[in-house]
Length: 123
Image (cartoon, rainbow, N blue to C red; front, top):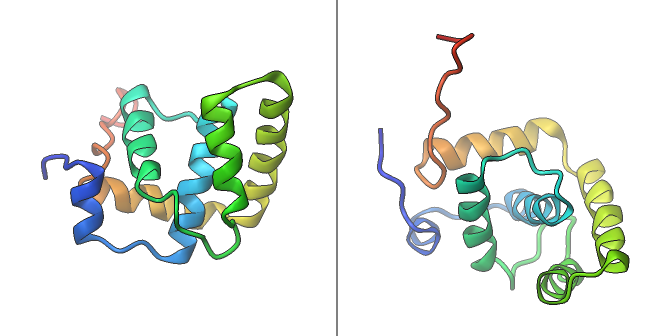
């Protein structure tokens, strides 16, 4: 099992495709919206990855979402979080489930996120 590496180092050695940049943006929207099911460590690592992607546009998700995310992080309000919710739902319709699952699996396989531990049911 590989040791976890900081996002900046990971990104130096791993390129993100445009679809994967979409996934990073969508995950950040999910975290802000409170709908992300990742554990706290995975969320922290995802936020760290996002921090290194704030100038990157995805295939479908563009720079306007970076401005919204920055505003929601700096000045969260009910109105702004409603907009985050809307953008998150829209983003999720633009990214297929298999693409998102493959992206998260890559992050685990290549050492940015910890590998999932099997649950008692799976063991």
